[in-house]
Amino acid sequence: MTKRFVILVALGLVPLGFFVFASGGSAMLIFLSYNTLILALFVADFILTPSKNAVSVYRQADTKLYFKALNHIELKIKNNWTSNLKIEIKDDLPDWHFEIISRDMMKKVPPGEESIFSYEVLPKKRGAYTFNNVYVRYDGVLGLCKKYVTLNIPEEFKVYPNLKDLSKYRLIMQKHRLLTHGQKRITLRGNGSEFESLRDYVDGDDYRKINWMATARMNKLIVNQYEAEKNQPVYVLLDTGRSMSYSIKGYKKLDYSINAALILSDIVNQKGDNSGLLVFNTDIAGLVPAGKGEAHRNTLMEALYHVEDSNTVSDYHGAFFHLLSVQKRRSIVFIFTDFETTEEAKELLEAVPIISRRHVPVIVLTVNESLENIAKATGSTVQGIYNEAMAESLLAERKGIIRALNQRGVICLETYAENFAIDTVNQYLLLKERFSG
Image (tube, rainbow, N blue to C red):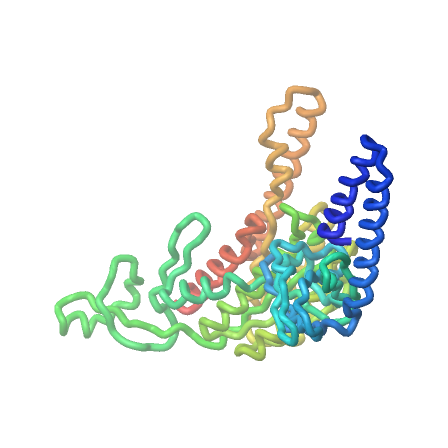
């Protein structure tokens, strides 16, 4: 029933009121006749209004959606009837992994014409999902009834890691600098191993690159400009074990790591190097050999969109030996992992020498904000003081493990999850500049 029908029925109560106060039989007759007419019109409206074939629905949205980003989805509705139809639709989103932010899902569509219905959705989980039914509701020809139609239009949508920041990073890279979250600039002066040109000396240049013959000839300091070495392999090793399953600010460590891994891989390719990926847990879950180009990036996306965490403890030894077997050339290796217990940390400590002899490992860890907050709290109760002491002890133990890794020549990058992308890219640029110098 529509609002129009309810209003018309309500108007029929007016003669009934006269009947109550005036006891006039004519009022009751008018009341009954009026409502019989309204009911007859309602039935006629239901019969005259077309059913399922009145509308056609087509999905025309891009089936690639991006995690934690607003995605625009459109459906095209065609009115197959001979009169205007006021149509409202609702898409059948799978389970609770999608949030509708805004929608434009009600329109009047002229006969024989098409109209676009759209909404924005925020995916909360990566993976492949099938959107099945579209529910259509439209007013009757007389505006007294509403008809409902369920159309089964299955379409698979894949939710990929969010790459909305890639263009921003690429633009900054073109200017040979990268802004960190603290607004500190890293300037790239074109250090490298292949001679490119001569230029004036600027403060901070390596004195070993001064060209003394050119300096004497031009009577000012001149340095050799080098082109950065190309095709350096840079691998991301992505741990999907228990330590990466914990949530930070509503999202798992693994999600932050995947996003950072894709941005890092893209910047690596922008700098002329080759990016590779190895996903591991108790076994090797995926491997993308080092490469570059648009097809390579799509391969990385396909390898990562459905990666899930688990409750098992990852096998570092197996992952590192596997990398050695497929990557012979010296590489920079970013290992996205973490440890929650001393036993997990010891396994990492024991396994790191496997790759540090041939490659340059960078272990990316997440700052434990929960422990930091507890340690900073001023306990006013016995329990509070105990919690504070325990947190400080665990943080001190973690710092000791990081020191032990540093002593083994391993770079440990402990940062906040939301800064993974910025800090890992900066670390890559620093290493590239150091190795090319």
